[in-house]
Image 1 (cartoon, rainbow, N blue to C red):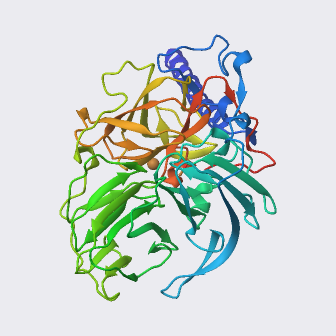
Image 2: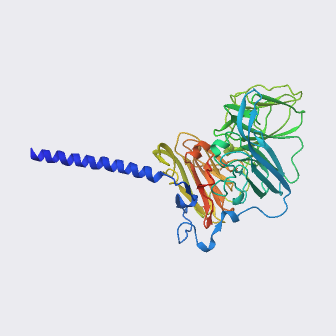
Image 3: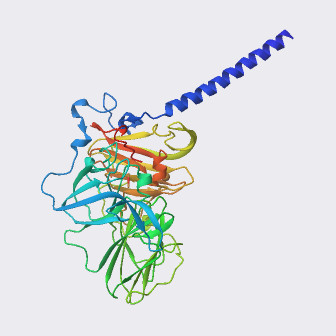
Length: 494
Ligand code: C2O
Ligand code: CU
């Protein structure tokens, strides 16, 4: 009897201890997930050296070689082109009659389209009239010097209402890009703070119709260049047409071009090699991604639609014709399109560092919030890897998606060559990307040259996912930042 009583006591005490341990662990996990009000992104995460050299003193590399992000700005000299973009609130009226309380550059959504020529020194002055708590401009896909990258809390402080900031960079990559705020980006981009930027070849664009078409779900309505419904344009037969498709949303965008065969001439601002003529495919552009499509205008109408929505751009000889709606037969696959061409490195190059970025999901705490959260290599932000590189490194990055949703992964400051998908080598044109849809259950291998020193974001361009912790960095050894996330400048990059 006494024995049994003792045994019961022991069990009870043991159970209580277990419970306390669990509660204690939970409290500890909760507490340790809390982000301070203000912090340095380089002070967080797990520094991953990818098998390459590591600095002796841990975090920031050899002190003697430390350089601040702020020193990595664009070139001096008189700019060849100047722009001024004013961030401000505006009521934007859609053709359907709906009025949207938007955040805009220059009062419109999308903001002013910027066109520059290759080789030009570009200077853009951002003025923030009244957008709380601040605004920045990130040049999505343009590999600008780090201080010009526009990430609040990493490369600059958010520009408060009444403030301004100057960006300078040399336009070297010909192609289609876009710009957007990288302060509270999940909210500010959704509400309209973005626009297209096109870098034209030195010799100018081909004669014909050259149009950026920005697709965005605005207040629940699909829009092309800020217009819902159908927009008509007169185009004479024989005209060379280039449509620069830009997806500024969080979900892949199913574009369908009907009425003509066409080529996908460029992806993410890089021309494809020998793109073949195709017809009827769905062009599934990644969030943040861009496709340039080209064709010669036929005598009959052509239409660009976002599949399953009323948004359309109708091109015709008389400005009234509308090409039939077609059901796309298949999704265009850039991994097998075009013809191979020489590349500076490939799958069998000797890599200086090799990284794995595995996207998952698990229960835990994100800044104190309990729930199912995105993970990178098993950890919830900020317990994620920071990929450390040195200038000149050839880097291999394997991204795998163990979740059931697509993640458009975007690397700032670099273009990466897609080597393989699920172990199969890409077999078409070299495919250089800055924003790659990594589908559920899929694994990609990418390679890039670390040739742009700085602290760079590597994040999901479903900006809601980024805001929910699906974000990390590629950081050059020895680069430090004087900026802080949070704090008085209200820097919240996501
Ligand atoms: Cu288009 Cu980090 O962004
Ligand atoms: Cu995502």
